[in-house]
Image (cartoon, rainbow, N blue to C red):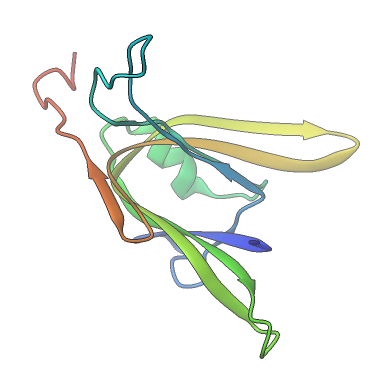
Length: 141
């Protein structure tokens, strides 16, 4: 069971330390027929992350500059039962990540949070890799 997670973005001011992740979800799907036969390729969904509300211009710029792509990873940590030290248990890494949603939320009953949705050309979960080809000609349409 993961107790904590951190987002590491290549070239980000907090690249070494990472950014605390409050929540994260991601998925892979493929279409299938009514009788269960696979009818399409595996597709990756968005990587959705919530982080504490921090003043981070780099994240806002990643959203505003539509062609900006980032490489990064989310590391999930559990506690090593022998040493009681945090230990990386799983890693989700991505390449050519485009930030497709940036959402800040605040209520007077909770801390500010930032929700990010990343669309990536390549995703690796543990040691299993998935990749798609993006049509660079339709990208600017």
